[in-house]
Length: 132
Length: 132
DNA sequence: TTGCACACGTTATAGCATAACGCAATTGAT
DNA sequence: ATCAATTGCGTTATGCTATAACGTGTGCAA
Image (cartoon, rainbow over all chains, first blue to last red; front, side, top):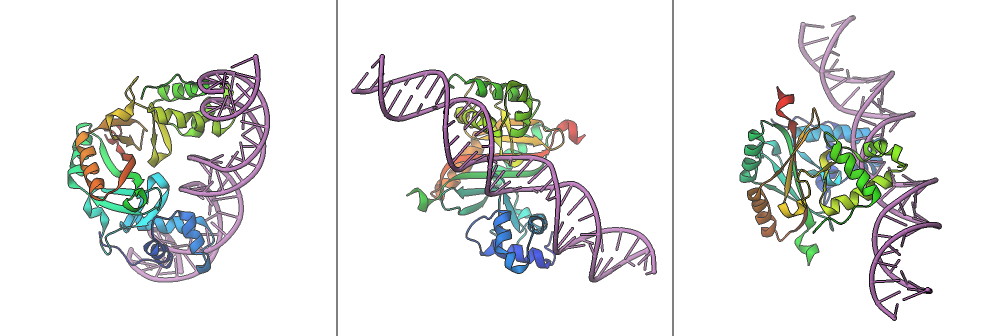
């Protein structure tokens, strides 16, 4: 899937995420866009919904936040399952793809006759700088 | 770690989760315990906090819900990382442990000098019955 | 031109989680 | 025994996260 032209709101939300140091909550994004006319959470959530669909933004389930994909210009969906390491101190996020992990998980679900739609792998802990 | 004697509230919350068909939200648990004197969310959340610590209950981050551990009498923390398959239609949850997946993920974070604390693996999709 | 799809704006509401206070019971050291 | 520390508990209030439901405007194809 190639990413379609983003709308105004989608572009604004995406730009905020791209410039951010780490993941942001929807309400944090909203606050950063008040000067651009954003007034309500739905404006953010609707844009995020599309950006997630296009694969240019990820949702971090364990911290209710969103982050721009680490592969600029690329559709992340094509890389298989994405794993994240999230620093609980500084908020930094590392993104990671491993086909072996994908494979093991998909083997297992196949054995269970389970049909996977969306997989979340999130490792919370401390990054090198914060663990020191 | 061996599980200490549960308090009254902890026992009530755990029993509700054990008897449930699938994962429950904190507020659903609260509703089920109103007859037993529960009035406020904190009563549930405080019990859950301990049950999670003891490893007898899991939190499903992607659906903001809680489920009793599938290994009765056992401390799940000792099994390494837990993966879940969650049916988005019927809510059924399957629990799964795979040392190879653990290993790959831990190898990677080690390479990043990242210190992991808590890992989430959740696969949402359709179970065999619901996919039919 | 009519119908449809989509993005957008607004208000209201639902759902999830914790802060802060105070009280009661338990434990363990002095 | 008593005092201090810890832990569980109850209550009120609040904050954060997410979506429902309504209506508007625009572009495009039948």
